[in-house]
Length: 611
Image (cartoon, rainbow, N blue to C red):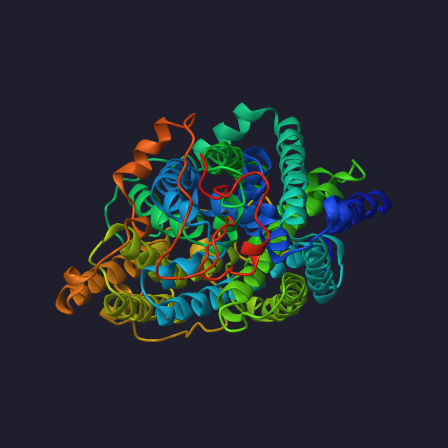
């Protein structure tokens, strides 16, 4: 799309800033390929040798899911639907507490690498395989969207070739993931979160200068109905209300932070459980900071274009291009700053994609290769892990092509996590919180939850909810130059909310479409989790779940919570599973990492569980 007249364009300094970000990310990967002897074992490659500390892991957790979808999607979300999105601040708090106090203690004390190892220990191989396959499908789909989002912005802002940008992202990510493993992923995330904050800050500061201060921006937002924080309508069909964001958002994001391999792999790479929990709580501050920045950017966007909406006036072709449009508008006199913002969007992508590639490699090696090829040496497994990184990097680039058909990016991304993440979280919650749950209940619950989630999620893509459900706010174009053919005072309600290619138009609305398919996208995860839990409990009770003998290490116990208060005491017990006869020693899960047990950590055998 051509850049509108009067707008800035990319200059040499913008390319320098942008290229600098890519080069530094790649250099970090090269450094960790060789630092400390390089990636000698699969544990070094996938888990950073379990020697990470809280602060870099916390910043990495923040960067991983504050992707380009956040950088581009959230401000346009606030611009069109108002600042009610900031209620997610409460959601993040609940998510972090649940992840740190319910899921982390169980995963950490088992010393596992893949969260899906837990499913075999708690249930059986079949349940583990189902969980692994669902995760792989979910992550590749999501990563496709995340690669496509900034490429779209880059195409809008600079005229860069869209698919050239998609391939560039995938290649850089794959390069440093393959060379440096988890350490490279975490430290590039630390660097990239700094770039993201700098990019946001440049937009907020310049907007405040141009518009006459933050107070003017807030005043414009108030007059335009954007400060709509307290909508307590309990109707689950309304897209965003206080309750859909608190309840639905908590389920959606807990499925990411609590059980998603990309996140869990980070905090269980910490050297102690105290550091792991600390990383989650520090990460909460990072989430709040990024949320504040993106909401302020959305309000600045409205203040700037309150009487001339670029989307309605056809100056941009999609809402996700509004932020790049604003950047070129207000930062054109400052060479390098538009480049900084695009680097900011790209940093979000690189951090998320690298996390996904690393997690996919970990899950494939731990769940699909190690259990069936036990004779492989550590060096071979390390090479296989790197090969998997390359393979998944290529797959994720391919998925970006599908993402180009998905419509509104933020909603599409969270919908995918809801549809697949919800049932998976229900499965883990069943194992950790319900002592009598058995493998039959787990399988039946997972399949039922997945089918129900898929039904509502795909239905909502094909028959999107009507504007009275999504409630887009009024946007004007009366202040634009009269070079457009539209009639004045045209509002967003006359434009479709989503531009999904799967959408069917001019269809007679049925009660199913107006109710079930109009369910808020944030509730997809809630439905999946609760159906999985409920069906799993009933199926377990009816198939003799109460009669099984269960190792208390596989469920959340009172001791797990009380251990928060004795961080200065030393634990003496060493993990040993009678059900998996192996040599003694090592810090990882003995069920699958039998080879690593030949390389005991010199710092003590109970490294994986010491507080």
